[in-house]
Structure formats: C-alpha cells, structure tokens
Image (cartoon, rainbow, N blue to C red; front, side, top):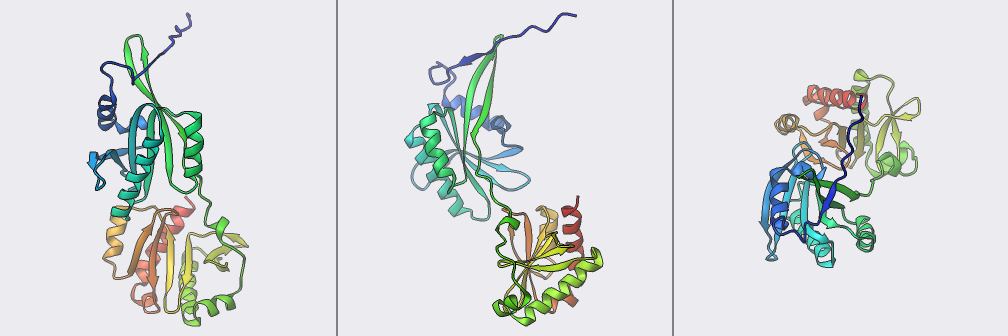
Length: 289
C-alpha cells in the first residue's frame, strides 16, 4: 500500500494580497466565527459603532455561557494602535453591558514577540487574548488557520483563595447568631440529600466538608440578617427563569465560578423548602457528575 502524498502548504500574505483584504477576512469570520477557535459562537454585531466614533470589527457571544468577545482584526503585524483600540472597545462594551463577561481579542496576521510581551503584561489585569491568523493555500484551495498565541490568565479557584480557617465564633461576630442559625437550617437540608456534610469555616465563606475534605457544591456567606447562599450549577436559561419566578431573593449569576446565588432568610427555610431541596440536589448532582 502506497503512503499518502505529503503536500506542503503555502503561507499567503494577506496584507499584500490584491483581493484577500481585511474586509474579506472580517466577512469570512462573520460567516464562520468558529474559525477563531473560541468555541460555538454567534455574531452579535459586525462593524459595531462605538461612542468614541470608531467601529468594533466583531462582537461575538458564546451561546452557552453568554461570554462576549470584542474582536479587533488586523492584517500584517499587530501594532500599538491595534492594542489600544482593542482594549478601548472592550472597556466600552463591558461598561455598557455589565451582565456579561467580556474578553478582548486581538486577531492579527502576525503577533510579533515584541508586542506579545506587552500584551502578556496587560493580560494580568485585562481578560485579553491574542490570535494569529494565517492564510494557507494547498493545491489551489485556500483556508485560514488560527493559532491562540496568548490565552487568558488562569484564575485561581475559590478554594485556593479561601483564606485561613476560622471558627464559628468569628462568623457569629462578623455576621450574627441569627444568620448562622439560617445556615444551620440549610446544612440540615443538605444532609437530607447528601449525608455527612459539616460546615467548614474559612475567612471569606463557609463551605461544606466531608471527612475534612472540601465538597463545596453549596457555600454560605452569612450577613447580619440573611445568608447569601451559592449553588454551584451551570447557568441554564430554563433554570434561571424558574428561579426568578420562585419568590426567592435571587442575586445575579456569578459567571466566574459558576454559582447561582440566593439571599436566604429564616422564613425561606419553611416557605421555599421544596425549591431549596431542588437547588441543592441540582448542585450536588452537577458537582459529583
């Protein structure tokens, strides 16, 4: 059996090409945003007008997580103005639509080592990605290859940032004995669903543990009169709508760590017990899936 023939690709210089210009590239990415390698995305807007007078090349959104990507496209090598414009448009969009997570994306034909160092420094403070897009020709057929040369800085987990272990008395002083009793009631419900759970008191929140090991599918942040309770469940439109109609005090979804958040008062333990059982069950099932 003959070995398949190896065909070498030819890199096409888009910036110097007579017809494959920046508008052409933007149209191709609008037609098929998956070419960027960022997952299943939908195009929210192309050439989106900005209050500053400029236009954002592409506004993309992940259809599952509602994360938005502000994408600026440039042929040739990335330069200072491209970086500044990308960050400016990202900042405008995140201020206008704070309910979404926003990520700035520089998509250029060439991300040079000099500017990669600069972008890497900014990446620590701004959610910023750099994607290098190359035009490639093989046997007369043309395609685009996107390479993620700078990804987002990996965020630490909540457990890594939980702070020192404290005792119950410190939380009673910080919040109140009444709110700790609400937490006790919630922990009792947890144990009807998943037995063996005890509170783990840390400086910034109260988690759950079994045999000393953290199992934080539900976490508590007691205040003076209620307990902000976090349920680690992936965001779903149907579940969000159900919660909004439940009568509980819902706080906006925490996208960074994937938590539904509810302010729970003493009366909710009785009035909304079934809803709480459902939420805890969903969180437990998602956590141990």
